[in-house]
Length: 181
Image (cartoon, rainbow, N blue to C red):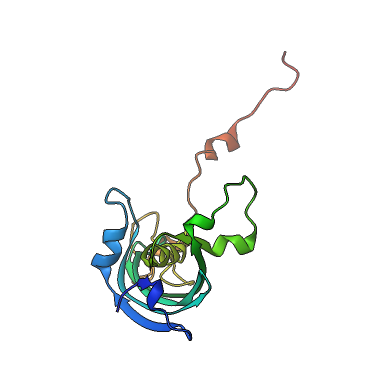
């Protein structure tokens, strides 16, 4: 099964598809020079496409496995993400060039040209939107010790109770004479 929809073949009741993709497919759709802090494992997409006159409504669910690095302990971990999606496609010819602020409901509108719609880019977009800004292997991650560099999740160290030194510690002892001008 494919993520390309041929509009003329959509029956009156719509189509329902289930598609699985992998890392190579995902990587191929992103710019080669783009730096990412994650990689993608398995991707599973279930979607329906319904045609209403010239508009096509595509909605479904995405499940993906992301391999990430924890921002506290720097260990790799797997994050399972899932998200629903819904897009309304209309012919590119129907686009009216106007300058106005987009409303929330307009954010799900896309355009197609010809008789096919490729939803691949929308699927990649939805997966990227699921990547957390600060990935954590767990909410209770203890991170790395700033003194010895050990992973506190694996082995507790004796440095946990030591206070860290601030670059402003030297200012504690600074004394200023009053009344001198």
